Length: 366
Image (tube, rainbow, N blue to C red; front, top):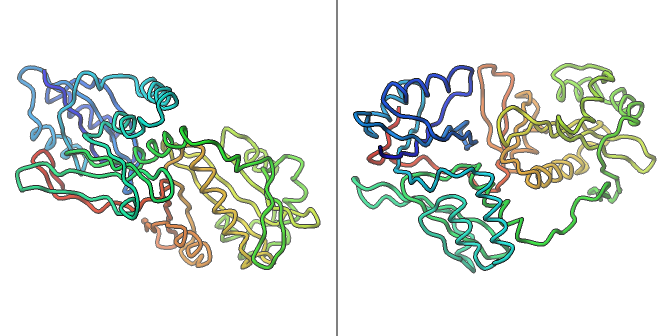
């Protein structure tokens, strides 16, 4: 009964996973492990299966999965030792890393099941990762560069299986577990704007309701429409209570020198693993002074510290200011069925989205 690791990209809609599992079962594949990951182009499901006697071979499984709605499907051999609880394995590796900091390349290779890992220093640490295709008949080899410090990184290589955004974020989190904490996020933080004005950024509290309402009233209808898709003049109390609830995410407020609320920045959890929704509302009089940029940079930092892999913002297509702000932070723009709305996605590992790789022997595209 050979073990196989199967990775496929799926459309994130109800019932798609059931169709994939039914397709695997129909071809004699017993699912032993399942994980859901985020990648640059959507949701990736990864299965470890054993194929019983008389079951399908990798090419047949690939075809069955893609017929059931999967795409960019990859099938590679797996080993019994890979069937270990992922959380337990990561904790053991982190414990080993604390005891042996020099073992970082080995630990990262074990974390991501890479074939090799090596230190890279100097200008080479800034190189883009490569995809090597030795021949038409051999599987491609993929690279991931994991930054460790200025001009220092670990280069991971793996055959047959591309690295996902989730895996890159896991590697970065393991590196942060080794580095000393710099205490970057106190209860409140002073931020200096471009014109020299100092504002305080801190988490939203329920006592802020009156000040938040006053800020909404001072905002123009255009500013409120850009944030809420509707020029609502007030924020319902229940909405503020939701923004204060840690289970739903994090909301920051920016306070001016006189204590008034100038802006709100939201980082709200979504149902996709490792993904949060980003939204900003900056009072008109404080726009164009660098406050939106400071809040965005803080949210990117906090998202990484929380283990998120991607931030997404749904904005009106004509919201030029927000689109420019996020694209300069590295966001990719995705259009949907509604031409009036676009989605901007920012990878929190700081890496550019990988180019699609050519087909390998166990890989097909639809």
